Length: 274
Image (cartoon, rainbow, N blue to C red):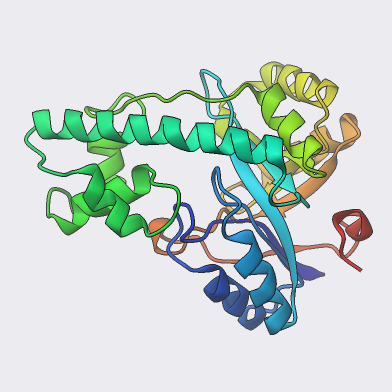
């Protein structure tokens, strides 16, 4: 057995740990491999790779993209090449869409008597991506709610008082961008789609036809039964099973870095790991 984590977020998106802190924590937790998969940005990958090399652990360059869908649908990308022109162009577009959404969220909050601004959320972020967790932390700091979870439940989650949807790329374009950047595309946390068995099988077939490489079958929040079902789906569709915790540091309470897996879970050389 070994411990890895292929789903980690840093302060460059909506996590609270810097890439260097993630590398240090990974060494302390005895991880064989850790992947940085920030939302919509590759800016943290170079400092992350350097920090991993300094700590003597395997670091994998990744990303997480949100796809357009009536349900939660995220695509992870591994072994991507930072600076890929097409990918970076579309990431810039996605971040601009996020910015427009954040403005609308803060406008809604002010109409509800919650006096916050995007500029304040940007100060909390400190990175290239400003997202709802930063607004949630701002609400906690200003005393409007007690916890990040309460901020989402009351104001920011889908259907809540200040929720605003945002423009996303299709799942097919997400996969194409990852593959075009030399990466490997993986369906993140399939359980969060909330699809029934038939719907999930149909989704996986559609994504595999578009170039999907794997399924995040081993996920920190999964029950053993869900993990087993997703491992079977990976095998059924000839896809690789990956493993991740979805670590966000202080922005996701109770989620620890590292997931135990078998030594032969993945073709490590395909991921650039020797």
